[in-house]
Image 1: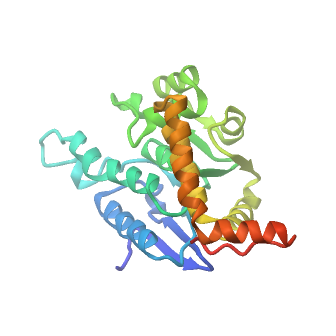
Image 2: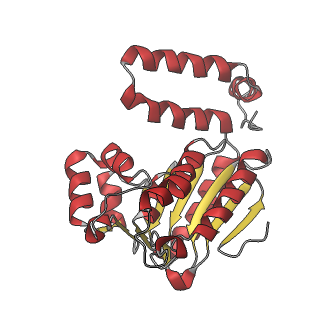
Length: 263
């Protein structure tokens, strides 16, 4: 597929997906969503890929939905925003949550609205210290979508989530780290190197175990302790039959670094 709204490349097991509408702060359009789905499908089916990094071109990560997109301005009729969410944002987040590789968001600037939720849908979020996170929906009479009402309270608790969503205040990256919303805030000049190092590390780790960890942790809030213990046992049974478990044990016994293959 020829990409016009994103950049996508794969090297050494690391897929890098760059939202690339810098003049529009990488805001979403229907055309961008089509390209995102194609790229994520490639990640899902290319077994050589071991990790996905998502970032933005220029001075923003993603400013959310482009309100000038034709799907949002259907003649003089009121657009069906719920249909836009169901058609584009819901499948985007579910695809990320069910992706067969770990995901990293490299937030290089403002992450607003659906762009903020896109970052939070990734397993690990690394942000430049100049970056900000913003749930701006209340300013236009809407609620956080793209999983925002799920990710925010999960990460920072109800009180802070409610404040962020209702007041639509910008949250600086360092404060986002202190609140537990993201994994790490780093100096702007160190963002690329930090993410590259992390991606290379993840690409050498037992991929299936990392993804199972994501699935188990996301399931936990809706489980009783007994249900979660059963889920853990199921994952441990499955992973215990994998080559990576055998390699991990052998490397431990032989006092050497393991060579995981993701199998």
